[in-house]
Length: 502
Image (tube, rainbow, N blue to C red; front, side, top):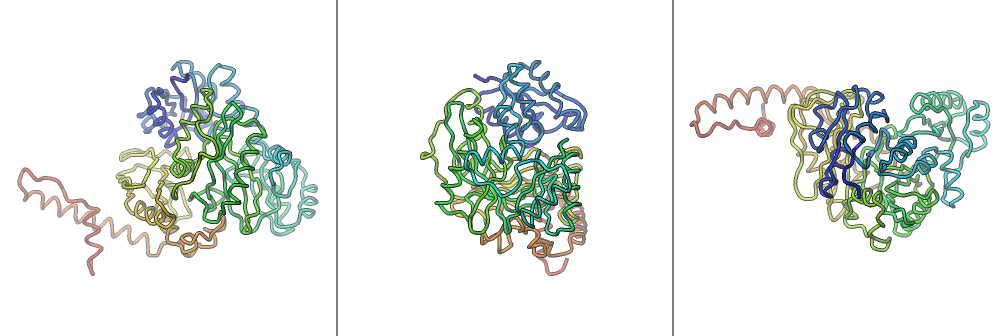
């Protein structure tokens, strides 16, 4: 049985994995770059080891360094989290060679489902619906033109390797074909070291719906229902919820069965996600498989009532799944938003820097997965996501109301964050009514803009808090020696903004 797990990741996901390890009585080992020496996952782990300089290519992506730490620490398993090496077949294979348990699927499954063209072929063999398109890589521009005209515009040009929106181009006009294919290949080469692309028919009004699956090493596989992930910006998810507001029970059962068939087609074991593209008529097509834990896994945990990390560890230990498909039910509604260190009012520019103050939201039905704290300096080297805010309620409307309340209570100063933008999403009628698709942000651009002058408001906050700071110091000198606590500037600012004149 696994006794010590090295978490080959950083930030909030590393902390989240370590929490489950602690509940299971398993020791955790953190690895960190020089830039992450003071990160929360380093503090939270039972042991921590530096694996290199700040750039991930010199630390978190160096397999030799991670394996060496596993040897030194005596870790008998490695959990890759998501991102970095989580979908790296060579890493999974290396762990097996070294006698270290890789908490994830086999190298074969990662390889097969990681290459989008190979995955499409595999799904066709398993009778899982796929979007009409190519089943061979396109490397010749003339061939690309011929194929695109044959399929018919509009089409999506996608990188065969990787994901995250890189190497992806929407082509609507014939004159844009050459430039779009060239740009997609160039971006794919830079991001994944592979310039192969494939072409799919573009689905208008697309919805991005994914199914969580888990499979053990004894041939058992189930799905844990769907997640709606259509609120996206530049192909990156911003808000996720479950159940999907467009789903019917009949289509849910059908899609879930296809998700299980997709996993079984590659003898999958562990936790994974089958992603589908869905049109307005609920016709759906296989998009890709993520052979790892997803960022948005907490909403499934909350609605289904499971700990997916514990399930991953039990599967790695050779245990059978503790439930069958008919045992699993959805309870209530959950929503997750991703908090980024970026300025949504300045083209979402990254906002690294020192966090001066943080108040995390609390209360019934609220979960906060984060890794930052007051005094922590967010590095410039990694993804700007700093936390995830998850709420659960009995109904979708109550979940939206709860998310509004939680976002209102979430305070971070010292850096810009996406919190105001997320607040605005919760107010857009199309989102509240559940009538949205992957074009939501671009279709509601005006409604998602700030309603007042943000820069002037910031100046007002600075001026008011400075004034009340001065006044509270004067007031505190008049109090007795037993009452020295200053008045909250957040409270004072709230009082001041309720006045007719500042």
